[in-house]
Image (cartoon, rainbow, N blue to C red; front, top):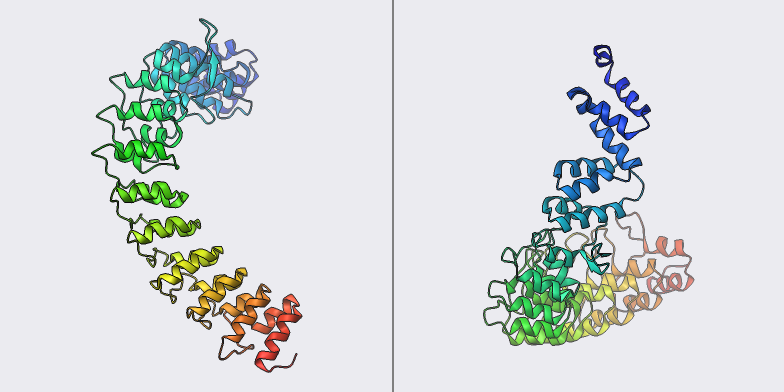
Length: 435
């Protein structure tokens, strides 16, 4: 044995690799501490590769956390499918009430707590959540995102499981996951009204955290707003409020409900973006009108010096641009923070002729230059937007087609590259330059 121990570790590892039976590798591992420290990881790797991870299943049934962890660590290097084994181990751990093992299994990629399996006792089909509730396992057990079992039950419509877990004195109704969302917020977004009502029947539930997250379910929002002590202006970690979300999805009904509750029509998130800006970003004109009538500022500027008018112009929302301009409360000369491009520059590039016409009509600066010293005409020329080129030329007092921008290009060089005779002729006729 002394001679064997004198061999380099690399050779000892190779010797272990030549052993074909897991039992023989185990015997070698148990010879002494040196072999255990050197070869134990290989033993678990061999079990994962050739033994269907029987060590994990055994550990899950018997509650041996260290063995389960060793097996999972070894499985990382195994390329064959392991998900079925993970589920079997997870079901065993939940059935036996081994919370610590269930927790590490839940964190494995691909595991879905709503997965259904057949009970060995009565052959009935149930989800992991239902089994967990029956086994009195820790209701605050979380997945790799930190979502607890009751959050999963709520978002997947398992109302009976919600009821069972709510009856547990250990359940934390306000446990937040890594995104700052509570079980109630998930239930409001994806679950049933009945489940929401079950949560709201508890006096210790934090309704304010849930009001921020909604996906347009009007009846659920009404349930929340009927709670006397709810703060409808509550902000989540990113600074969003319920109004931000309602404005984003363009739900006029929810916007009206929130405004009627007296919420701030101009809440700012951490990027200084307001609810009206979010509506503009997604083109929700009716929501913008409601917000404006409630006192929202149509000309607020984000941290990137972006505005509702700029985003609407660059996205082609003609009616929205017209409304914002008609308010008379938006400043046209607001270039972006980094690119220094104005609303007309974006409309000219993307071919939004009606928007370009509106902006010119209300006095947008045609000759303004961005950080590349390019004008709206330069972008219209490059992208072949003939009608916009004509419009810009008609409303411009002076144009130098040979003026070079920061990219070393002129109006003529850009149009020549794209071989557009219509635009080339327009430039020549307006500047008096021969073709």
